[in-house]
Amino acid sequence: MNLQLTQEQEMIVGMVRRFVKEEIQPREINLDPDADELPEADKALLVAKVKEMGLYGLDIPSEYGGPDLDMVTRTLIAIELSQHRAGLYTPCYGVFGGAGLAQLYEATDEQKDNYLYPTLRGEKSGFFGLTEHSGGSDPARAIQTKAVKEGDDWIINGGKIFISGADKADYGLVFARTSPDRGRGGVTCFIVDTDTPGFHVRRIVHTLRSARYATELQFEDMRIPNNNILGEVNKGFAIANDRLSRQRIPYSAGCIGVAIAAHELALEYSKIRETFGAPLSSRQSIQWMLVDNEIDIQHARWVTLEAADRAQRGEPFRKQAAMCKLVASEAASRVVDRSMQIHGGYGVTKDFPFERWYREMRIRRIGEGPSEVQRHIIARDIPVSYTHLTLPTIYSV
Image 1 (cartoon, helix red, strand yellow):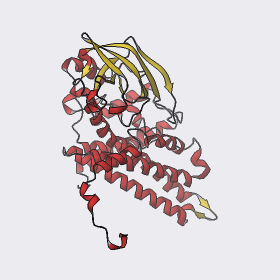
Image 2 (cartoon, one colour):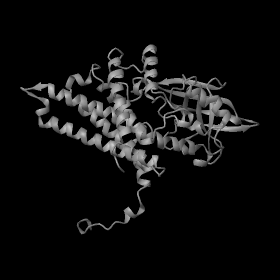
Image 3 (tube, one colour):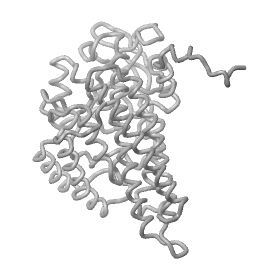
């Protein structure tokens, strides 16, 4: 893989970097440290500027009006977009637009008219309803929500947990079991309107995140028409699995962006903060922390861009996506922790973004599949031949 950026990529990355530094970071100074929204006037102004840049709707396929950008370029942009206080979960406060639920690009024409196009126009929003109390890391087997066929409709009963934005959404993708098969073959994806009788938001689930909280949902005899099935009956897991693998790449890129921002703050502070008559940057213990930051960032960047490159070329990338999610989330957590430590008491105040990054980075090691699950995915894809390597004599018993 060639990591040398093209001239076009260098231009785009530079343009986005300047936008974040000149338009986003200065506006955050006047916002609450836990804010996840800009004032409407500011957001409208910045959306217009992004559209002038030709970068609005980054993840929208070009045939639906999005910019024609490859996966590697989008990943490079995602690294830049998260380099501010709210960047981990609200990169640039949404002014670059969103792609909605990517699964809807494979929907029927009627479903696209009812859900995809209104979402792309900003008229509707949706949620992704997969995780349940019984688990989220093995959804094919953990899903207990059931859908039973009744005439031309399906009756859904069950519930979901840790679902982002469902209380404000107009619809969502709900995965339910439609077959006695307890494996991957018995799950179907339904498009559910949130005003459907029997759809309930039971409660808001408060977590370490500053904003964009999760919800718990309950479904009671919820009647969904057959034409609201996304894809085919009993083949919904493939829809969920593809989303999970692909989402891990921009998810990792967001972690890297925050790590870079934290590291840059630590570098600058170490030069101006003096202790015992010398700057922190002259202390070996601090130098080693900064070196470890550099190593973690470069490692995470490499594996994330490799995953993006493989996905872009149409090669299998499940293992690489798991690697980048594992490496980036854990490495960025360490970078934020070290950078906070370098700032001392100031690091844990809301005057700096570290405390928010620290809390939200902890969630990243669980979200989109915890670190342990990523290791399990990687282990399954290690070539069998690796297990038959002849050990050197020194390891013989």
